[in-house]
Image (cartoon, rainbow, N blue to C red):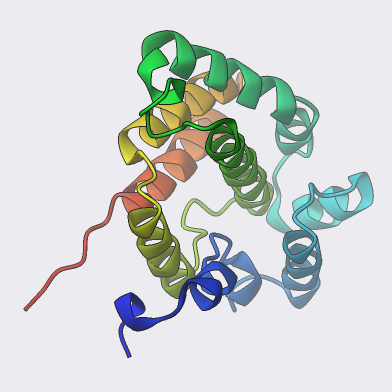
Length: 191
């Protein structure tokens, strides 16, 4: 059965970004923490972050600063998108009415949340392949403006990089955002 044949409700349940909790290269404790946090769609607690970063060797201050600033970063990305693409939220625009725009900002916040998990784990490849395929299909059916989402993700990346001073941290953040963008913009290859 192809994704095009799956009903909408099932597609919503299947659409999932985070794939770290199924990555067998990560310690079981890390995978369990990520699975619980992701199912609750929440940021990591200080203790969870410390446990994951101890295992990954990442300085917890980097993902910690992303967690602390996540709302601010998303709001800044939203402001930039609305400034450069105001037509998106106007009548007839892809993010009109307001509930469509709110869903977009929620998705941006969740993308940043999962990227923060990836940074804590020191893993730039962090998505769930089948979950991302379902998300792409869902976005296609809902006519989500992927171009606008890409602009918002670019802004999130730019603003997240402002909080990373070490070159390795900057490379990791950049790689995480690039991986997400690649997965989000992947098109099905038909043979």
